[in-house]
Length: 352
Image 1 (spheres, rainbow, N blue to C red):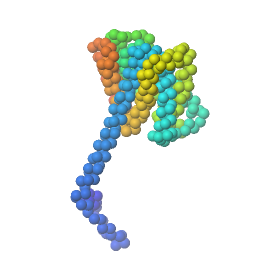
Image 2: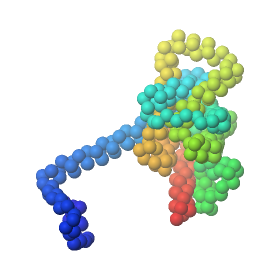
Image 3: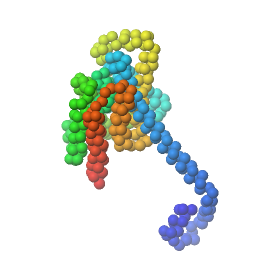
Image 4: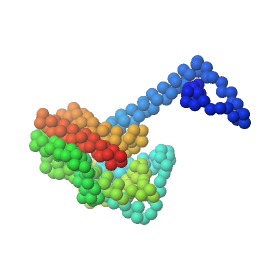
């Protein structure tokens, strides 16, 4: 009805005798309501699904942080490399099941030895970042860890300039000033500040930024592009292959201590299993949220996630915070928001 009415308003062509006459019956008004209800139900269902993925992403991100902190600091399991290796082993098994068995995404194959070497290089950077991040949780609270992690945009812009020689508009670099200023303020007032913990957390943040820049540089051609699920499927086994021997060499006795802990406390084995599972869910929900929203939405949610994780960790672990530290964290997050907005505007201006 709506389309037919619109055609009569827009044009009034002369009928051609050769054209067949098609009698289109009018749609009864009573049948329009179920269609509208069906569309509304579909929209609400889609919104509920997206909200569920976002909540799962929040819970998994915050959950793996709290579990890592509990195991490495509170429980006293002082083997961050071996714990990261367990994460990578779990990601390998779950990724294989998700991609090869459940077919959550279309499987993609490695096209050449050169592409394999690029993925192996990315895995090495990934190992460095995750191991440093887990190690930092032995020495600094989750709230301070998240404050440092919020400076990722600064390192991303720096590596993009150093590696690709790509410059950004002046406003993008200006927006990074509060990112750095905030972490300086937060560091000076952190009651549980630890120099080594601060340095390895900074190295983890830099490694995460370096991986994103190198990944964009190495896997840019259509033949080499891999979605995040397939990339994890190939990166995780390589990372586990690197980390397990490194752990046995750098963390002597880790296997005996782990087995002894499991025998003495069966809940410890469940904690390790839950830790590895949640570590994979972080990657899975990251992919699902990006697919159902956008990369920009994920970036905005990530800014809020850091604040939520810091708040929850303070409630659970009761680590002391100062008003100056809260202000410094707030300055950093505000700088990240300004950076995201400046990047978005620079992309719009460059495309127009």
